[in-house]
Length: 401
Image 1 (cartoon, rainbow, N blue to C red):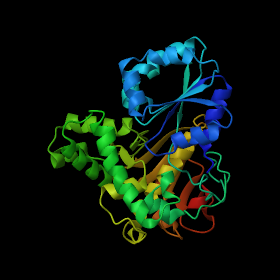
Image 2 (image 1 turned 90 degrees about the vertical axis):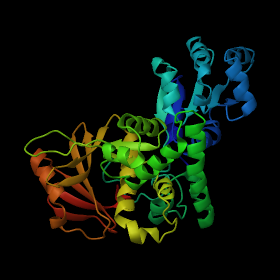
Image 3 (image 1 turned 30 degrees about the vertical axis):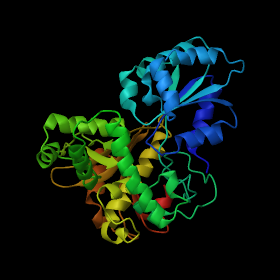
């Protein structure tokens, strides 16, 4: 399965630079590098999932330098899950500075890397992001109307469409799995995340409390989070709740959507929204039945969640064009699901899990466009065809983003 990130990584390597590829667990980082990047750039593998390799380099990080300098063939070095042994980053920096090797580093947690100074390597390492599957990678994009990012069909359709995305999410392992296997994989993912990403990194002492917190966050995913309420529900302090949120963001499990607060005439609500990075993981965390029937119960929530994540990922592919994402809500209840900030202006987006949408159902969108003098607004729907609702509001099918 072709992935957008492969082209970006190959481009950076073509500049003669090293790459730091961050992404949540099982997003496909290792697969892309070993199957797509390695075709063009032969790799020297340093796999920190192997306990013997990890222990050896933890005890003596400088051994990486000595081993690589002894090589007669200079390959690109691939270090997988580098946050497991952040101590080797000094060795990586030395080898880059001496122009002896070029590196591909992958990681699923920015937390330990930031503590160990990866941010102190400007000009040495170019950071890239690997998200779960996008609609274009699944062959689902029919027409690229929002121009948020390249969305050409990268291959054949995989029989994995919107219903599957809403229920099972977009981790690559879901695509070719059967229904029962998908359920087991998602439940296992939730357990593995808690055990490996949280307990193993010693980020949280009270794992049971954190587990309860994580379920509550999943239940509220897509909403404006009240930290004080979460503190009361979990019985932990407000500073600890804030720290928990930072952990989820640092381990790339949570996406933050801040409120658009450029006030004109209205009082704006002030809390950020948060989205779990994957709808399937969200559904598994809240204990929802992992079957297509779930759509009948939570259609609107799941559709909005899937579309917001898709747009976030698409905009990340074009950071030079799409700078920030927000939502907009007034204290009187008017709301716009997404506001995309671009160099050319604002793009407000409403998301409706229906085939037909009437203008009267869009008071927030029309108010926002009037307030900020926006020339074009969009409504993402389940319709099969684009529809012009007004001269400057267009309803688009979800697969025409």
